[in-house]
Image (cartoon, rainbow, N blue to C red; front, side, top):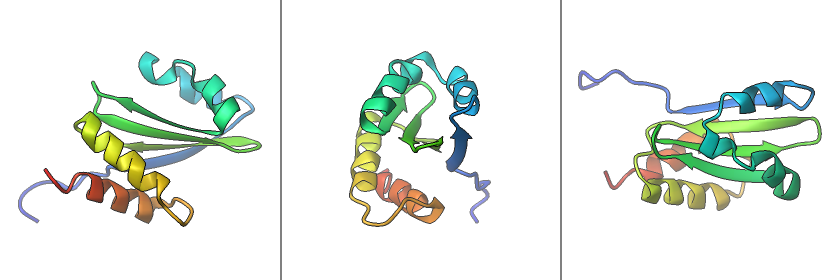
Length: 110
């Protein structure tokens, strides 16, 4: 490594709908949380971006839980849009390896 500390970029958690999801949503930035519950009820999946924190979010609602994926160090709307496009094109279920690969592809022009 070139003297830079490696840090984890992709995070995932699953929150049950019996209270855990509400706790997670309570800590989200207002711009990310705005109308999120309604969007998940309608579509089951929602992407969000917090430009201030440079963080992308993916929320997926299941019958009894919500998966929350986050990507740190997403530096622009363009990187966010590229990340979303790559995630939407995945032909296999999202996992940590695919989430990291999509991120690395989205930021490769830095």
